[in-house]
Image 1 (tube, rainbow over the protein chains, first blue to last red):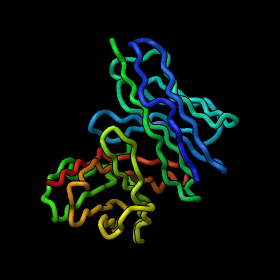
Image 2 (spheres, rainbow over the protein chains, first blue to last red):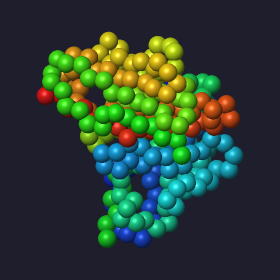
Image 3 (cartoon, helix red, strand yellow):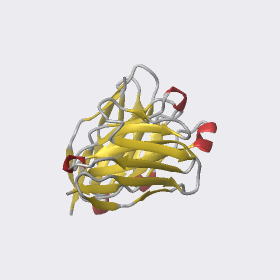
Image 4 (cartoon, rainbow over the protein chains, first blue to last red):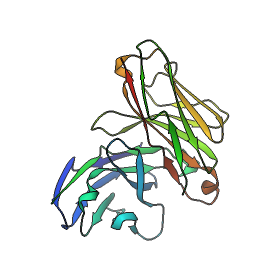
Amino acid sequence: AQSVTQLDSQVPVFEEAPVELRCNYSSSVSVYLFWYVQYPNQGLQLLLKYLSGSTLVKGINGFEAEFNKSQTSFHLRKPSVHISDTAEYFCAVSLPYNQGGKLIFGQGTELSVKP
Amino acid sequence: GAVVSQHPSRVICKSGTSVKIECRSLDFQATTMFWYRQFPKQSLMLMATSNEGSKATYEQGVEKDKFLINHASLTLSTLTVTSAHPEDSSFYICSARDGIQVTRGRNTIYFGEGSWLTVV
């Protein structure tokens, strides 16, 4: 079975500072990895995804993530955050489509950007 | 970009009644749709996976007779909460997989905006 652990439930940071949101996954087979953002009372928006290829993945809003197979991690980073980045961030894992493909989410990390 | 629409966005119903939530893929064919439930300040819990034209596959612990899922077409899936109780109050989110993207080797899933259900 696959699982996802987001190591920080809350991350407070000042505006324009860098941020890293940590995500570790567990799986005995190859998986796809995703980061989603959820603003209050809204659905989820895909930030970026890793399916294969380059381990450094760039997404929207200046976010990037690096897939590290040996450490089973997929940490999300942004060099300089804005107030508008305040939201809940979810890391997710899925098997390839031909093996089921459903998304399993981590517990979420609340990013709070302060002025 | 691809859009998934949920309706209603908010609904209040009386205890004991049933309520239906629709999930539509507006500009793509969704071969697979997923239904999630989210409690405040918590993660998304997968309830079931539905494939067009077949019965939904429910996750362990989810009552299939209470949460009826129908995926009658490639653009519409519905979740019906039957005999609703206050503990069913929650945020329900659907997502849809683009079937064409799958054939191109891409696992692209799009989320709806969610539906708030309050049972009084």
